[in-house]
Every structure is written in C-alpha cells, then in structure tokens.
Image (cartoon, rainbow, N blue to C red; front, side, top):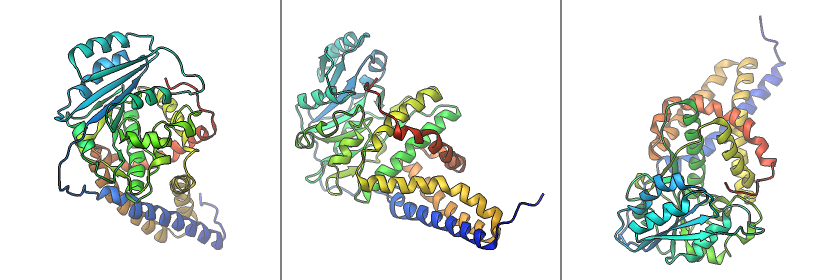
Length: 377
C-alpha cells in the first residue's frame, strides 16, 4: 500500500528541519565532543606530588567497605595522604569493619556520625564534615561502592594540579558484565562523561561525578560549602562543580590509571531510581549549561523521528546522504572517545545505543519535574 503523500512544500519543510537537527548535532560533535575524542594531556615540566585527603561517605555500606575500601588504602603513593571515611548513622556492621581496617592501615581516619543533621538532607552534611576535617588541601572524592581501577589512582588524579588548577574531573565507570542492562548503563555513563568532559575542555565546565572527583579544600571554604543548595538532597557533586568551576580552574583526567569502577544497578527499577535522583538536580544548573545540554538533548530526541518522516515524504536520495554524513562523523568521534574512556567494546553497538537514547529521554524526562527524596541512601 502506498504511503499518503504530503504536499511537496511540507515534504521540503520536513527535510529542512531534519537538516537543521543534523547541523546542530554536527556542531556538538565537531566543536565539543571532538575535544575529548582527540584529547591528549599536555606534557608537564615537573612531576610534583601533593599531600592528598581521600574522602568517602558511607551509610550502611559494610559490604562495600569490606570489598572496596582496601583499593583506596593500598594505593602506591609516596607522598603524605589520608583516607577519611565518614560513617553516617549506619545501622549495619560498618563501624566494626572500619575498626578492623584501621588496625591495619594507619592512614585510615574514621569519623562516626550518630545524629542526623536537621534541615540538610542527603550526603552534604557528612561530606562537609569530612572536608572540614581533612588535613590536606587537595581533596579526592569517591563513593563506598567504588574502587580505584588501579593502584595509581591518587597519583594520577593529583598530577593534574598546577598553580591555576582547583578542580579535576575524573571518570567513574562501571564493571563490564554480560547483558543488555549493563551495556545501557555504561553507554549512558559514557555519554554523560562525553558531555561534561568535552564542555570542560571547551571552557564551559558544568558538573562532575562524586564517584571520581577532586578539588581543593580552599574552593570548598570559599564557596561556603554547600550552603547555596543545602536544602536539595542531591548535587553535592554536580551542583557544587556547576557553581565553582570555570575555564581557568578546571581540568579533566582521561588517564586510565585515574578511573574508578562500580558495580552497576542489577535491575531496571534500581537504575531508574538512580537516574531519577540525578535528574532532579540538573534543573538547578546555570542557564548556559541547561541551554547547551537541552539543545543537544532536543536534537537527539528529534533526529530519528525527523529522519523517518523525511525519508517517507521527501526524496530519499537527498535524505540518506545527510544521514550518512552524520553517521561517519559520529562514528569517528564515538570510537575515539570510547577508546579514551576504556569503553571501546561498546562501539559495535553504538547505532543501536544511539537509537535507544530516544526512548531513554522519554523514560527519564518526568524526573525533571519530580521533587527529590530527602535521603541519600
């Protein structure tokens, strides 16, 4: 059965709209994402090391502390450092796990919180206590469910500091496991990193992830901690960086020694809950960041519907070359960036995963309008 034909003018309008969306996407690929894809760390004249305070907040994380904390404690780092664990009102065996680890590792410092902070929901109060208790200027953050990918994590993250640098954005990846859900989670994590790292390289840093993030204690004190958004349960990583980062004081780290790893969500429900918690904070970003992210998301969302209608109602000989141009540039950028972040095994699936993002936006868009939950666990 033949498809109904739109008037020639409307077919042309749909094709032009498709071309506009492709132009917007190519702008992001070539102006922003190519920066990460082809990024190389500039050589350093010296290899100075700095004292570092690693800070981990934990609530009812006895199992994760047992498995992952030794990875932070067994780092090969020749300079003074400490690992601070803020045990936030845990009801499990965390206290006893930490007591045993402290007997073996003298650099481990434990802060036991036994009372909830009124009016400061989420993780911000325990994290603030940890930062204020830190002995050293360089703060390195990760989570209890994360483990450094190598024993040179501290070394690699602190190497990016110089006299102008106050913030270092790292990559927090997930273990590679069988199954579709694992690929979807890792792809979304890669896409998030592709954006925040590329924007930072373009002089427009807007967020970091608490699984692997470093900044100077002085920045935290100067910003008065999380006071600007202490009433919001989330945002201890992205909203803080959104407020303090700029093109002069922020660097990224793509050295594979600097990565951290986490176990991904085991179910769709658990993953959806995690992502909803993140998207409830993105509405508080600065306007420039929201505009650029929103425009890219809109172009991604409209791309495949406009491609289909343009293909059906306009000359396919014009539509397919436009699609081909986008796919060629996209595949080059994605391949190089996936390789950069240690996710190259996802490349054979990139077209499927790119289509998936259309449905991802539909699933998670309502999270932008939901009120965040007051707890961080």
